[in-house]
Length: 494
Image: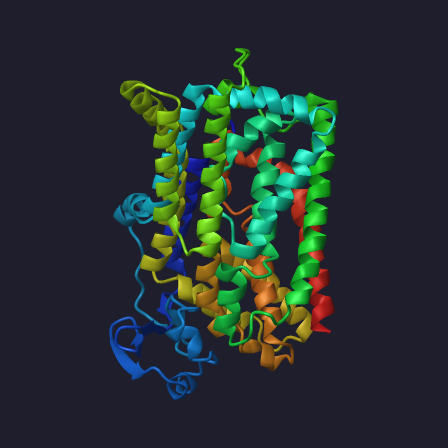
């Protein structure tokens, strides 16, 4: 007996969610979206739709407390749920064929991120063939000697800054093949590298300050300025990242002093293709050509980050950068055509398992939406908080958001679905709506650090760490951060 693989876990969860569609009542909120070409609102119910003038008066009639300019400017670009429109619908339980086809639909729906992962894998394959990784690791191990702990601090901080400012999350999948060998060369295990990258992103997003995919879109959907509560979120970011980095440093020191205390499997680590190449005994001098290749490789990540944060890029543009980078590196390395193609395909094949994990996770959301239980879960969650005092209310909402995140892992998706419904509850308990935004960010971000329906399993697949081993590492930190969240929200509520 052993803990099941990531793919098996997701299939089991998909089966359980399929059963839930037979138990949880079906229901739906009406949705509102802005049609830019016609300059009007489109109201969509389960079986009909109609249009309204795009005006403050229309929003007022619908009890949507969001300024009209948030729609016309494109700040809110997804359909939002309309308060007080939930209605029970005829049950739509999902059957065996729905369960079987959901992963296929998920892979098709998640094609953008899947192709990003595969193209990055191809690029890594090209890099391995050139020997640039091996030469770079040899040089870096000399530079970091005696100062390896700085790698943890700088990696976690830099990635968390990306998370808190522009929602760096899926993009971190590109960092594992290049950064994990550096952590191995520094004497750490893959768990330290995974934690520095994945938790840097997850905790950064949890304490988002100006993240347009969390803070701004949620504040817009709640009808408040995104600057409301900014000072508190900055304090939360500093405290949460301090706790996280100290925890990673504690584990890293323990493993460095006694490798037997590592939670990872050395055989699984050695089986990673990018680890084998970067840490091989074969000595390759860091020539000028290899330095240029490493610069081009690093520049791809810099361009990707700039594109997402400054130029409005998304998966097509990001994938194009890595595809072009792979071709450019092939030219610089003077690779033969057949060698280039074989290396690229082998690198992509190494990450094919991760691509399937992403598709399987998306399939779970499809089962929920097709079974019409997503809105029902949201409706019953909002009913649960009725009549509470503000301290109990905000902390209950904090944990409700953690539960909802299992079903709706997307930060932007969670914001547009829940904020119009849950943010008006703030007036009932005499607190500011910015606290609802904070509870959403913290609950969604914290649970996504362990949720199997988020990026966890895809990240674990890249470093070949079992989900059970990760949970053993993560549970103490999760409890500490949850307590930080409770204290933070309680202080702000009063």
